[in-house]
Length: 250
Length: 280
Image (cartoon, rainbow over all chains, first blue to last red; front, side, top):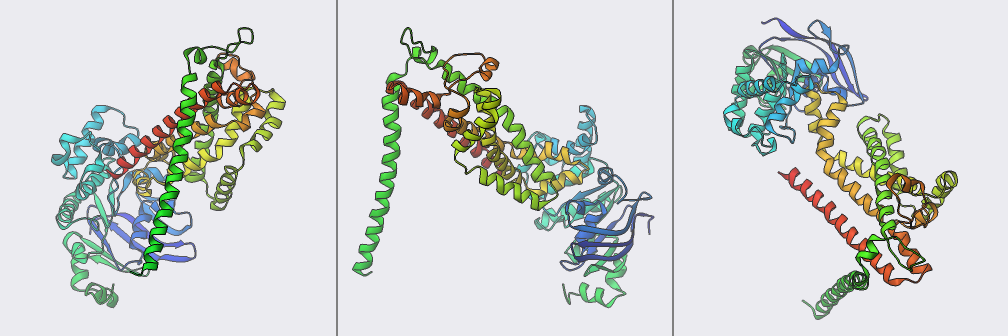
């Protein structure tokens, strides 16, 4: 197991009165893909959004415990610096209604890069890394809204890569896509783990098996089991995990 | 189908047709009547001169200028205030309860007869700074502030939350997200609201009768603001009611009507452009 890039220690989270995450403790290994699985409402998306503090946007959220990234508790560090390091790809592709180029350049510009040459270079590298460069290189000035759903999602991945994050959080990134686009995103994720740490929420158990190195199974806000994907799917330690992955509920 | 039912259906149809016909005829009659009576009285001399009792000439240049000045002065003050308040309430304010109260108050204010704003404006502004275009403009600011604010708020709410999340996810701060993603995404909605406000300012007379005065002297912008002056709508009232110059009154009326038409046209063009872009 690779060295841990994120360490979660006794994390609890409440939406108002209801507790959505209960005593989560786990380590996310660097440069690998960790899949978060579990039935709807189990807390896996909430957990993902905690890792770059996107839950801050919801006013009623209360959090205890700690998440350490780079030796620091993320709840005490500067949130925009954290999100530069821990990027996010959303369930529904959400390109900004601006040109493809400006979409990719948005992050770098946010963090102070102004040089045209530097931005050109970042845009090309990010689009190449997200395996969409060849499809869009001739229409960088066109509005990103005109791309297909699958292209939009890869554009969003490129946009996230443009700020050079260490970790990429993906919240069911293929649930709104067709099978071909889905397999392209999966291939992409497997290539990206050479350079980045990926945490992916998925409803699709086959997807977890196909692409992830580690799997965490959530149920009712608890982390039931966490381990190597192969092992968990062949010899689950917990009865609830076995029931879920064999399709007895969920 | 029974005969009774058939008759009923025909009666309903005829009734609806009649209602539509009357509505259309009234509108067309009104527009046609004003334009037909107004256009022949519009002359270059009327548009380009000031009135003179000595030469018994009537010119509405000062009223045109005053109207332009009051529109500009009002917008300069009301847009930053209204848009700023809307951004704060929609994007920053933490207490949803307080936001609700302010929204409710704003909506209630926009339903008040404008003559009440005139009365208040007279007591607050004109009695302190003299009857002047600026006092009138400030009164119109108070009158238009709730509408501009509410309209901007609604425009801000049409920007999908996913855009905001995407920008926050890249490490953008709140103000940067608003400036680069939220505002550009709803700018046409905000502009449409402002254009419709121009229409309301152009058409306002009751609030200005109390506050801006009746003078017909042409000044520059800054001098004009400190002087009493009548806008086109007020001049329309004065010429028709106090001087019996119905030709001039109808000329002004047809100018205002054309302006109102142009304003509505540009507002609807902008919002159509907005819809097309959002659908793309």
